Length: 250
Image 1 (tube, rainbow, N blue to C red):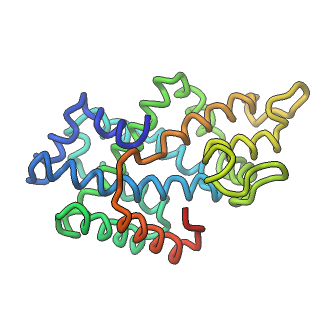
Image 2 (tube, helix red, strand yellow):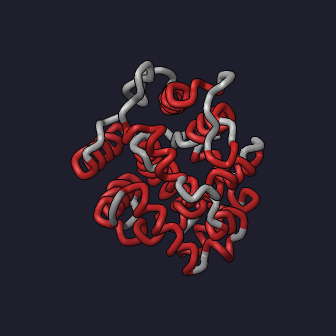
């Protein structure tokens, strides 16, 4: 599963049509808009996951509003979905200015106005986060995600795991090496907790770190956008995220 698979399956497979109706555009325009947004959302999620923000991502995954946005078109059309999705965008992009620039970049390649894309993107972000949780639950990870999110210091724990984006000894230095983002997470978690070896320390709440490692690898594999984005769009995204977030171009 990737972000495109997830959004295509939203609301019983009718998510694209429902978004089109919600924003007064054709299903073809809705499809083009969403596929233009997904690379930016994917990059934002991956940047957060490799820079200590994975705990905050999990809190959005387990937000009931985002889960409802994924399954219920009425919930996705509510002001609460826009608010929840706006919170997601603020988390993965850092501030509204970056989110607006990402929307403008997507608009250039979707053939729609930047204003419309900025209205749509929080709703899509809310649906994506709910879909990530739904897909993770289908893989048996829902309970683990809920248990992790219940830990009050989860952000600090996972921030320590990720080392603020710096790999631990023996872990890949870039998400593009060593098997991608999941490989990087696996190396970091393995270095911190001994890969679940006998005698390795437990996380708070008695959660087995080997289970966390496997779950986080499965989850982060879903962060890929799954669409063929134009080279110009990807270059623009790299500029936006590289210059404004101080992140390495991927």
